[in-house]
Length: 451
Image (tube, rainbow, N blue to C red; front, top):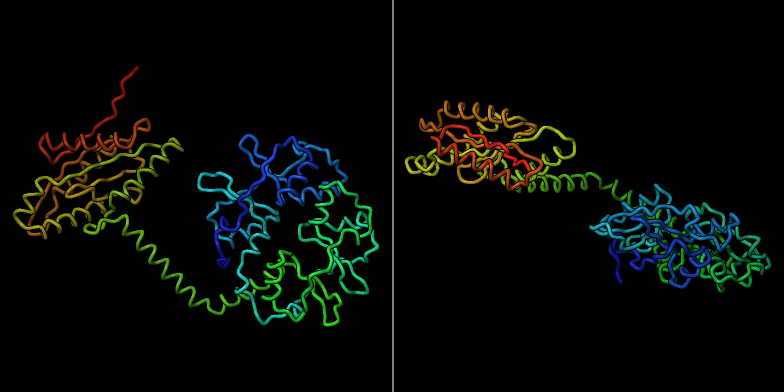
């Protein structure tokens, strides 16, 4: 199967989660992990998630811990979780920054749907993006390989196993003849077998080696094919040259990729700027009324949600909602035509924008109706604003000498009511302003019926 170059983390996570009871012992956890071919078990208690990994078990063994100890008695670490739609490179940065070996993967409902390791990320990357010409023998091998002859006893060298990628190379006159990995040690512990025999009794043989003339791409393909975590590099005579971990190979490839980005940074920046500008333009259009340039109903909904959250979270002063309607607008259209009517709507929009504060929001509600959200403004102050706006509009001369008046209804938000109730009260106040003669402001207070 061909992998995406940088997929979402949900696409590479292991979906088979091994959940277990905290009451089981370390030995029982090891047996379960070995049986299910996983590197961790998850404990979920009281809404909290914790994880016990192969590395945790190895550390417990090195500290002289008793295999019969229950997991609940250990300081098991919290399982940090990442959304399944997060980008792979972002999660790789999390691994590098935190140093943890496993992350949980959660869906939109925060349900645990998978477990991911750093190795899962590295092996998901398509080898086609790696360098073809760079030879692994040319790379600087920073870590000296851990080498022993086959007569060494395993329990005497087990302290070298601390991480999932650790391994001991068994050599004979400098040539690799076997390998003992963390996975092998894990199997010995989980099965209860003794570790007091020579390495020859435990090692895997023959060893899969890579010639130092192999390219990074060839080495990565070999690792993927055999599902191994390290390239054991030999020279033309079969002598052990060194060991390059999967992590080092990927890091080198990323370095080359970053250089490509640097060399073409101007083009990439220009492309990113264009995409961002396009996104901003589309976002603006989605909340803007084309005729007046004010916001639309969608923007009002967004701002109302923000204001309700502000009032709820901080106990701040309430906001008020104003609905404004042009008096006898149909006569303007009938007398002067719809083009003049549109010009009137634009001018009214400009007048409203010039009057409100930056924290307020004005939208075209529909037709000749407008809505204004007055942030942090109780009813009395909102009514005062409405009367000033009404008077300013009445004094203003519009196109073709037209003058107009407006009616306004205003209501203050009450945290105990729902959104539709607030809109109904503002609309009812506007209706009363129309019914009582137009060119006026009416306020609709909250009426609570005492129990």
